[in-house]
Length: 118
Image (cartoon, rainbow, N blue to C red; front, side, top):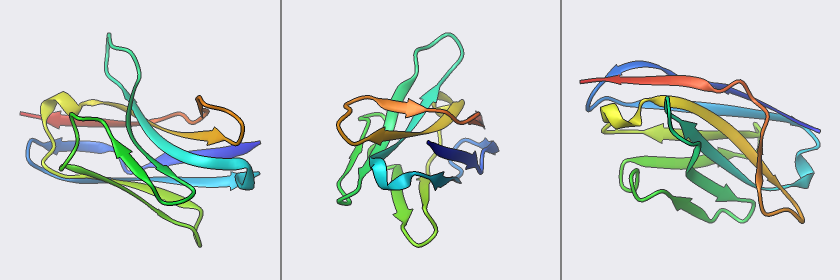
């Protein structure tokens, strides 16, 4: 089992920045990708960004050029740097893991709230 703990959310004005962190512990050797998902009220959870164990990244079109996903292997931590935030980015953000031999991500954390005011 892998434990994922998100932090770094908060309230920010449009145009501002936040950095989310996700600390992983447990059987992390089974993970081949980490992803940040978000869910806004009344909407489905969506993938925002992912990073594979090989360092390949991918982003939702809505955040390309504004968000950056990265990782610190020594700290077993994944980050999401969010710049030029917009009110539409308001959501609960979840850190999720994709395990080897699986195609879907598993999200076990509580999530962290990001609120962008206009």
